[in-house]
Length: 405
Image 1 (cartoon, rainbow, N blue to C red):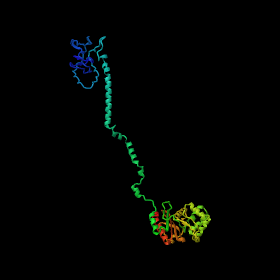
Image 2 (tube, rainbow, N blue to C red):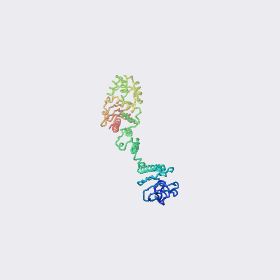
Image 3 (cartoon, helix red, strand yellow):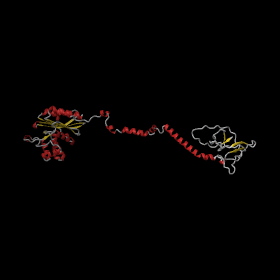
């Protein structure tokens, strides 16, 4: 019989290592097993280090254990198995001066544990590392650290980016959409091509027309609108100066003049303000550079002598707007209808007419509707009343169609 010198396990005759503790079997170190007296059950064990006889140990009979196959990985020393002695048997005690057998120190197997402790610690660390790595691999394969997982874990950030990209084009949002463009009506405006056609139909060189909206929109001026024409029938400068200076006497005369187109009231208002020099200074200060008065109203002799009152259609139309803004349009109560000038449907007209000197025939008119008001000056020379009336009617109708309907 063979026994392991480390743990005392019974060994197979051909075993090269202990199947219990893994201790290599060295024949030189194994004790010779001799049969003792069967009655006493004594067994004498001799070894190279143990020449003395030891008390016999009754070992429980066990089935033979086959040797474990050799594996490539380094085996971890198993814990020594405790052997329970048979009833009545006594564990052998080392004799005095004799070292205890390996693996039996203290009788509790602490020797192998101390010897194998580093291997156990290393094996535990390796097992823990493998467990952690396995968990990481499992989590990665499950999608916790995948690209899709990262994207899905931040849906709020994705939504924010999408929203910002959608709201970035602030410039295009201010542009009108096709539906807005289709439903938005362009602001009313005068058509100079159509108005020029009317003026040219009668006389482009002997007539001047100006149309100025009261609301400050784009005005129309014909080719001769800034040329000086005889200012027959133009009482507006006297009225505007009288009311702008606060001269009550001049204002009273000026109001009567506006209502009746009286030359006498007009001349009285001019005198109350300091004469024609004062009037001309006021005209210049207001920007009416093409208007000046060299004679009294109705002074044919002075006109024949070369003194004349002049204005332009552009200046006259601007004065009409100023009169409307000053509240004086209602004072122009002359009946234009008696001249043949008609107000287009939906409008009202107030104005003055001038004629006589140097074959001038003029109309100064304020036309109103619910959409607004415009000042219209139609001035002719050497055209006669009929042409002046027809031109005035055509201009009023076109302006109404373009601005006031």
